[in-house]
Length: 60
Ligand SMILES: [Zn+2]
Image 1 (cartoon, rainbow, N blue to C red):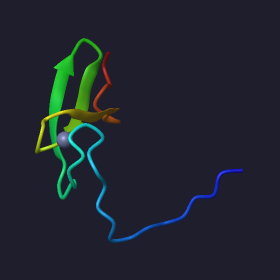
Image 2 (image 1 turned 135 degrees about the vertical axis):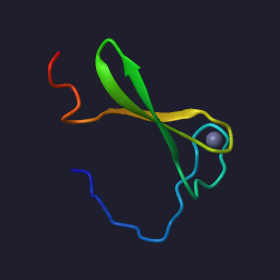
Image 3 (image 1 turned 90 degrees about the horizontal axis):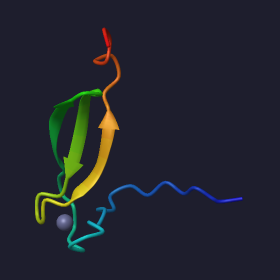
Image 4 (image 1 turned 120 degrees about the horizontal axis):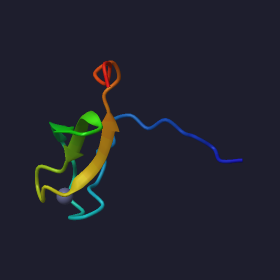
């Protein structure tokens, strides 16, 4: 079992540039698979993750 412990007030650190992530930049990507949101670090612009936006892929 893995214990999940909630930590509030802790700033995440970018896995690429090791700087505190006080904010996350995001932008929309439009492609063949619909709209995705890409999240990236404002310091080094490395991609932190991509998520699919629900509700925007209708009609495909
Ligand atoms: Zn970074």
